[in-house]
Amino acid sequence: MKKILLKGFKVIVLSGIIMSASLWSSAVAQTDILNNITTELNNQAENDLGVHNNPFYNNPGGVPNDNIAVKNHTQNKTSELIPPLVRESDITWSKRVWRAIDLNQRLNLPLKEPVQPIRGRMSLYEVLVRSIITPDPEHPNKRLAAFDWPTEALDFTFKTQIETTDQLRKILTKRWSSTNAAGVTIQDSSWYVSSDIVQYNIMEEWFFDKKRSQLDVRIIALAPLAAPPGPNAQPNRNVPPTPLFIVYFPQARWFLNRYEVFNANNNSEYRTFYQIFLMRRFSSYIYKEENVYDRRISQYALGIDALLEAERIENEIQEFEFDLWEE
Image (cartoon, rainbow, N blue to C red; front, side):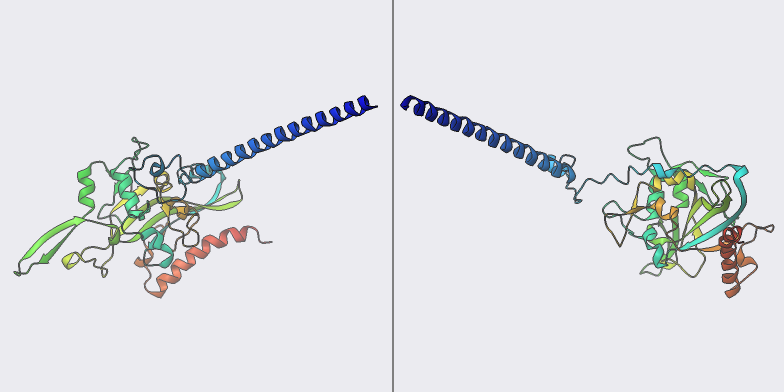
């Protein structure tokens, strides 16, 4: 009897030891799993914060990155650069118009500001000039082509391309006269800057694509206009602005898509300049439609009549699509 009890006790003790060992090994395994999960979460957090790609963390002597994450979303927006292909046989109706974008309008401030570059943002004029003068560091062979706006031309023309730095310097230089303390009149000059730009003109074509059953638009050309300098280099806003150069918009959209525009509603959802034009996030008015006389509206209508004529052309474009679906 005693032998049986002793054997049973040994079995119970051995089972307890085995169970304790099993529980201990299970606890160790759970601890290892928790440690692995914690390490993985920490690594993920560092990646989300851009620690490994941020020179501030890897190199204490580097330039700090004041963003909470490495910003590469804008540079990856390439799929939207190519608009839908349109065949000539699918265009059943089209109208070419010329628009003026007044930078004094509040909706157009993102195209004008900031006058001085800040946190990678700059004005549209600064983006265009940099793209013309300096090739992109990541794409040395890419440079935006600019065309001269002849003095006698009223509207866009791609006849003369600006091929040298001297030609561009001549176009972007403003000249004025001023009087010094001794009463002597002197001639001076400097480059046009972002604060001198008061308007942009665009040439675009509206068309109806029967394949997609959609009224669409394509911007063809873009041109900045600057206020001519008055006495002491102050912009003279009492005279019509001066066109500086012309860029072919289908080529410019690649450059415009690499620079962000301030979004007052959400700082993490900046738009690019190309998106601003693509989504029509600007205020403008029509100053010319294609006509047999090649005249601007101001050449046959003035004052309120010119505004009504521009509105008539605008309504004609929008109502064309509506009229197609009326019963």
